[in-house]
Length: 170
Ligand code: ZN
Picture 1 (cartoon, rainbow, N blue to C red):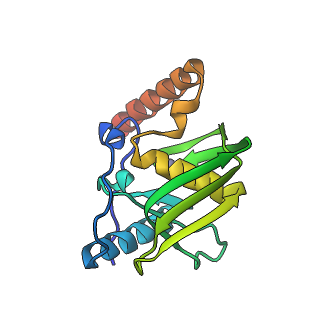
Picture 2: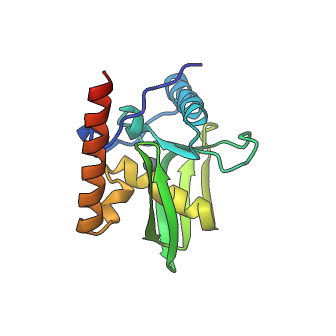
Picture 3: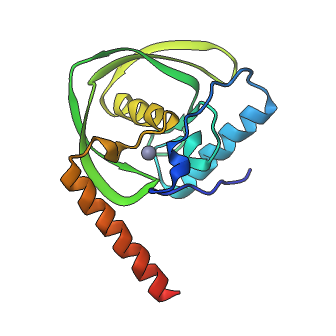
């Protein structure tokens, strides 16, 4: 298995919209497994294909402590939303930044798994937040888009400062 390079904000490629997967073939399975490897490597709990510059609707998630319960979601879609949940979120594409985001508390969602079965389920808590965060990625949206303009401005300054520091080191 191989790992991919994860794109970082403000890379414009994170804004591309992913297209649906038409057929789950070996190529898709390989991409999904390499995405999982990348996510484990980077210490994340979710990863969308958009983050590794692949514009296909593929998401991998693993919320287990032992990192042994992966979920592969092909063409994930939210069917219903209910309630409000606020959680502190982070993202592999926005390193070292965490902020509270408001999302739906409960979601009914569907996806196709790697065995080509359509799964429809309802969930809440961290999994619901994670699925919403990852589907946003597939649509070119980042969690920081939900922040106030002031907070986003501060984040941008922080990232610019970090980039300058990195350049100094090099
Ligand atoms: Zn993310």
